[in-house]
Amino acid sequence: MEKRGVPTAAIITHVFLNTAQAMTRMMGVPDYRYIVAQHPLSSLADDEVKQRAEELADEVESILTGAPVAA
Image (cartoon, rainbow, N blue to C red; front, side):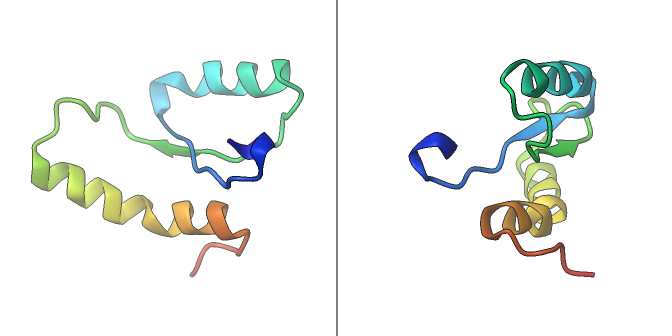
């Protein structure tokens, strides 16, 4: 999507951090920004997912707009 000009915000969990770092290097974009969330996500209840999303929202916005994360 990024190559087509559509801003994206990838979210991974911390257990996949090494894989994400390797993949971005292999794809020639070692500085590609992504968001690292605590693992797991799939077993969370709806209210916990909402809370995680709220915690990550500023980083998502920053990546999508190119603006720094609000303090």
